[in-house]
Length: 80
Image (cartoon, rainbow, N blue to C red; front, side):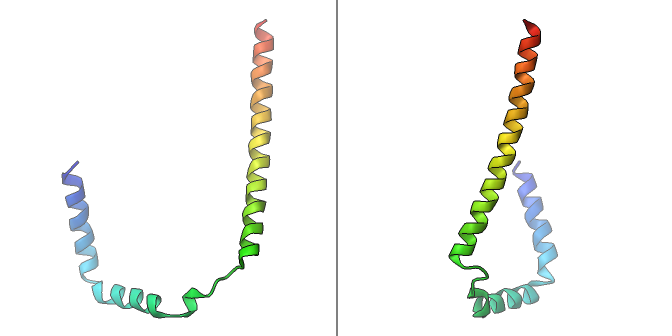
């Protein structure tokens, strides 16, 4: 396993060695710009989105559980 990380490092260093100046300049400008710090959503909007997504996932998981439970109960009933 020690040979694969060294191969990966050599691959990464070869591919990034030609592009180091452009990568550095892009990352530095991204870090220094103040527009990246402006939030897209408010805390309340984020909380609402998370609650909605969790509710949807909860509903899907409950439906899958009910289907699985029904299948297992039918299999158990057929065995008796």
